[in-house]
Length: 428
Image 1 (cartoon, rainbow, N blue to C red):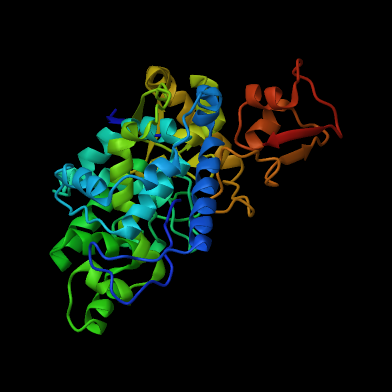
Image 2 (cartoon, rainbow, N blue to C red):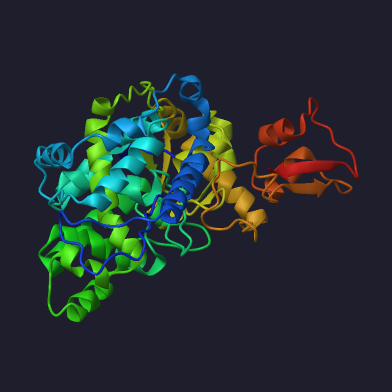
């Protein structure tokens, strides 16, 4: 049985205003309050949905930590030369240009990340081995490990207003081009491992196209075709800041946001931010499956709850994993892998038996992008079953692909007997 070490957990896409016709590095750029308000809402919404996830709700300390607020007055008194020198000192492959828009983005992140930085730092550390493995495999600069903060606030369940999904915010078509499968059962864009490899490949190919990392990142946001059109409209210019007035509003703010995130993640302490050190969620391993699996039986034989299983496996849109294809895995807490391997034949048999009696139920209201951390009852996906004459707990459990123990727990049953007409919760 193959094992692969994997770190899994459960959007910030910055929008910039219509700006002056030329935005060379170092030029002055206007920035309107309405756009700051928009960025604030997008960031806080994404972060709040992340906090509602299973593991984040277990990390209570960040809610009670004594965070320091960054003084915006103090920040306004920092000379441009200081911020510029700090960016240059990062010694990155990708140029960390500086101008007034970059400064505005730095100010934004310092202000709104100051009370959230402990979570971002913890998640960055958690995902770092996975990101670096993927980036290094395709010779992509390591500073791009911060790009998912801009894309998704490190939330694998994030979905943009245009349908991009996952940590790296892949659109359906681009994900398909890079081998990320999306169907009624699986959305590989939410798989941290697969999506990170795909993002690294995509970024490498974009660099080969434009021979410029800044343009490659911009193309990651808006597509290579949009960058080619901007180059043509500019008369052949190939510098991001020269192309600036020809780019979509969102892409204009994308590069400054990326630079700002690199600044904040490296220099937050110089601005008086003292984040609480959070303990990272448990380590996890992946097991390549040899047969179809229902998560209810995984829960029964490993003791890992359904909510945790969905958090560890955000790519699966139902409780069913099509393991018989030989290309899917299940991620489990490291300490629970042995239990799965010990009972895998039983899990496979029980899952196959249940599936032969009742096909996989695809709930019509479970949309791509719904955060699994939210109450399913509130989202309308709770399902009830009215007991018919002759039915038993075992037959009802098999019908819905869950275990008897799970069915009893959901309904607070102490005995194994049920009565005709009784209403049982079978999916919550």
